Image 1 (tube, rainbow, N blue to C red):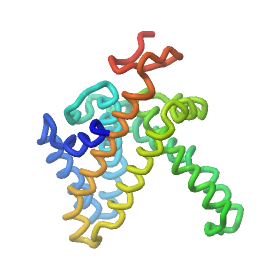
Image 2 (image 1 turned 60 degrees about the vertical axis):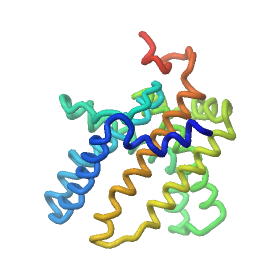
Image 3 (image 1 turned 180 degrees about the horizontal axis):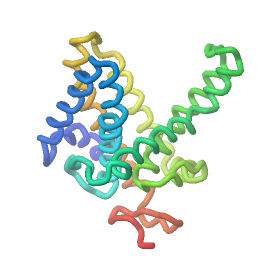
Image 4 (image 1 turned 180 degrees about the vertical axis):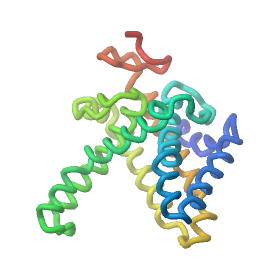
Length: 227
């Protein structure tokens, strides 16, 4: 538990200016959104992929035992460094919530039914595991239901606690004051919560998933397995 509580200081540990520049990036997203065309292009071609790659790198570096906040992603190859992590995140979301989306669509958008809530809950439970495994492995094999179940089976109570922390963090972010100016002002708080959660995810992977794993494409805290 103390290790997870240490995540509260993660955004400012070692490289505090990284967090400061991250806030500036988020503010840039708000400013870019003022122009519809330029904002959408900037958001989906650079800003959103950049933040997605940054968050996934936080999980990966934390899973490798890095205690300080990670540096920004490399920008030498735009497709591999930024767009591919963004695509992985989108696929994680689709795989996790596809049953819910299909059911709601086929049931004439009747989302307020017990079965719809069941599919939604399943997606909420499944997503953190596949997101963490995909972030650390840097490949789509992290989406495997077998791998997800192996992760949950190793530490069911820790996974439940992490899921609770993620839900609590999401609740905090969604319930912060909103509005044109308040969204701008609350951006550092939202980013802080997100960074803390990414570090907690990495610590969970460090403790329960990849230490000594020998399956194909495996990963250990010391780095990727040799091919």
